[in-house]
Image (cartoon, rainbow, N blue to C red):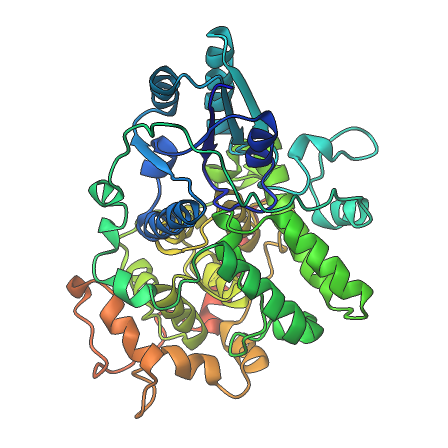
Length: 470
């Protein structure tokens, strides 16, 4: 039997992997491949570093079962054609991408391989519901989340595929690049050592994370997920982003917890569908990543100058608004930001500072380990008011009262802001080890006053919205 190339992307796992399971069922040697293509070269600093960590871990996992991960750099089509020629592979399998840019590329690759007599097949893997499979009663796509949730909440999700614990190896492995030569994490610089302490990399740790959450914390999830000073979320966004765990595994585990009487598990499953909604919108309205989803916002006079002092203060976590600054600093230290903080950080930039959501979207794309093109775009447009299912544009969250409501004891602010306390925590001090030296900041600096106060920002935003048609 000729070998099968399995092209891995954001699906770095051995369990519940349709493409890999299909390759095993086909028979013959299996050659796992990861390609440093345009989808990888476009990644920001933190996502690229985290991808490298995921690839290293997955390569080691494959080696432990007698296989390997071949690394190649270049345009995906050429790399795959070269490998087919070198190995005599008769089939190429992969998990589908839902980014329209790469969907088009993948379609071309599939067509080219088939024309050459190679079996080329793509499989599900990154989503529960492929975007074209969920439709409204009139045959359109969902533009509002709640109706979509109601439509899929009782869906019959197929079972989890077993682990592929043995992959037949070829007699001779093709040549492979050295991952270190790619320098995927180079742009992280000194921040990499700080963030590495908090990253949870690999399939086994992702499964442990899911099980621990469902056993110990899901019972209070509906409340605790909004409290940034409490470890109340699953933390799985990082692992879902890299496919170290499948959404189907999360769905079935969540449903099992729900059936055991843990009512808040339904909220967890609902959050999985919120991620699905983002990809549903990305597929049907691909402009969501680059343009206002609602075109009536195109004429809004947002600031687009990244070098504006207010934007720079926002980026540095030095706005003088503790909730905003704590969120930004948590991101620099851990590569992750609490979801409630993301909402407040985004609202402050787009409403209090009247700066374009694209500035924040691109900054997050450079700084988040769990960066996801669909969720990031939808989240920013939701906060700005320019997107689907958005918060009303006139809703301006008060970052001061929000912190008082969701961090009553002040734990979150103390954990991340060193200048505001005489005995700063290690996490707060780590911010100064992670940020660029060029910022010239030190824990002995005075904490700034608000660059734009909560009250002033609200007035400015509402004034800007007045007399505009949204």
